[in-house]
Amino acid sequence: AWFEYFEYYFYGYTYEVKTYGMLKGKIGVCGDYSVAFATMMQAIGLNCYLVRGETNLASGGYTGHTWCEMEIDGTIYVFDPQVDDDIANGGSIKYHRFGKTYDQVSGKYIKEE
Image (cartoon, rainbow, N blue to C red; front, top):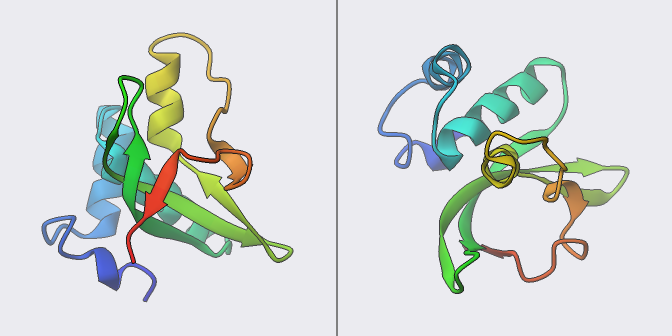
């Protein structure tokens, strides 16, 4: 299944539990946001999967991160619900890194090989 590769990262929790906890508690880290989003997308039949790697920091450099990708009509799109929620920080969400191609968010992500 699409999520087996990430079993080590989510400490053995089932994805349904992670999704429920994220939505019920309204708080989480990148993996929680991404699992919740991917689970909902899979539930409606979309091929959304998790990606592990690094994202850039506002202060410079990179840090470990998990986000989602979906291939739509042959193009891969980034969906990063945690980063956009963090950027909004209580304000309105602008979708800086949500539904964008990697070209549109150039330099923001490094995928693990």
